[in-house]
Length: 274
Image (cartoon, rainbow, N blue to C red; front, side, top):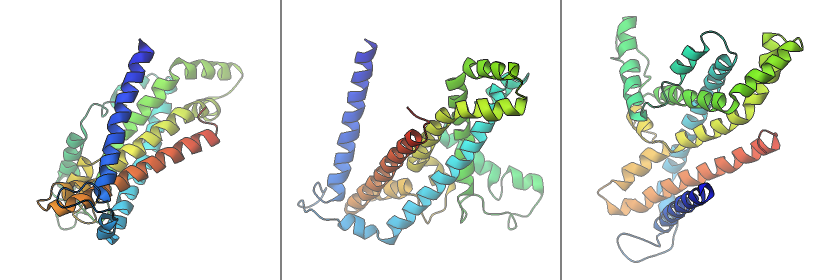
């Protein structure tokens, strides 16, 4: 029954995914227009021009920076939790608290914290004109920090859950062999955590690449990341913009698929995935 349920879920998921991607491809190439006759072309991609490359670059910058920061923070928290210190349970509960928080709630919280009229500015006593543009500024600082705060908890949760008592048992064996706390962490705990850590980082990158609400709320009007630009064009009153929206969405899917394939290849080649 378990295998049948898993197979059913996989088939349903694959059906929805394939149908969605096929619809995007047909719409972006003019074979399924909302208005007019089907006409195969790549005009939707050409219409984006420089904006398509700018949106792609913005999405990759946000996803890469968020993943790197979440990876470092998440691994650090996981190591502290797995070392078995007295405060590890409190640290684990505190570190994983962001997991159930909705991304839109986290985005609003960081907006109230980092904006020029936010809490940090009020506590610092600076003028609003001298406060750096962390929200909707030239660099996606607020978006990256929000993703890092949210996804670092996910990384820590995945690493700690994947190891569990295993890390403690190996650590005790290493201690009996004379290894100190730093040696146990560097030579035992971190290598054991790398497979789960690498997989969690890949998931975080894919999620942040396609996430919409955080970058929509905290990002600047231009350049827009791919999900924001695609949604704006899709909800436009101009139906002629639908193929451009599909082209942006299809570009996002292609980037995510390429990143997923590259992540699996890197994990397997490095020996972290078997």
